[in-house]
Length: 330
Ligand code: NAI
Image 1: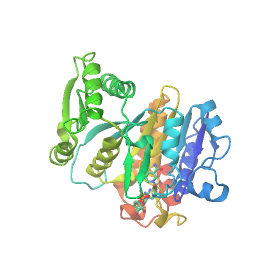
Image 2: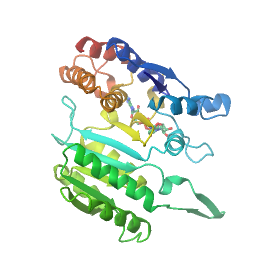
Image 3: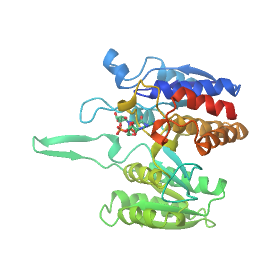
Image 4: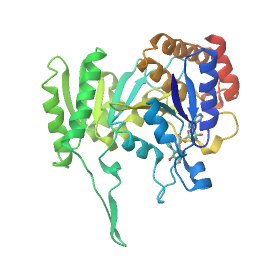
């Protein structure tokens, strides 16, 4: 099969190379079709995507994306937000699991954060009322809220999970978050076997730090989901091992949660683990569960052995050496 690879900005090309090397080493039936996108491409061409990228995703349906930089406060639109909206990948799914060999404050964490991906404050409807007042619109629809809540309950059902917790602030945002919560309650009626729970976002942050083991699947509108999912990554040792999938009815775009790491770009010292774990999620969704587990297992062994590690996790190895160590364990 063919799938689209978007190396992206900063360390993106280096960690994408790791994916390509592993695809070859595992003899996987995947041919990567590469397209450029992001700030570096935009600075050379004034376009955010290489022509043909959108058509390629439409054609091949599956994509793996490296990080793309988004300058803060300029007119440049986020590639991630544009892709999510263009391909209606309405669910952002982030499994958060403790990883053997990675130090963190908690053990045996196994959560799944499901974030609405297309609306809320990320719709980008904001304007200046006058030079001293800016206004942004928090757009929440019943349709998108029901869709993401149904995705969360279906995910729980298929994966044998017991509880779906809705994150909201409906006490203050009575219309917008109120509508989200109404959708959650309506959908929950179809899944009587799954426990429900509604937690206000601020309390949720505290509960996750105090008692993460009491949660299972979490579902949230876009902004809360964005913030809480990074908090969850912190529970298992940071962004270095956090993958995510942007899932729609037709298209799937997998990516690492971290950004383009401009401070270490071009030095061949980036940790490719998060993108490799995103690739493992993609393999799993393609039905290649055995290969996905093989890749996770090899990565886990390299990290646990602690001999060949990139600097962010306490070693001195290059991205290439770390990748080769994984290949040796496959
Ligand atoms: P960042 O995640 O790029 O970097 C934060 C820190 O983590 C840096 O010290 C960096 O060196 C380190 N780091 C990140 N990934 C690493 C890896 N794989 N291996 C080793 N160290 C790693 O976050 P930051 O600095 O806030 O954002 C930089 C750019 O990335 C921004 O333009 C931002 O918009 C973009 N970004 C893109 C994302 C995406 O495309 N999905 C997600 C988050 C940020």
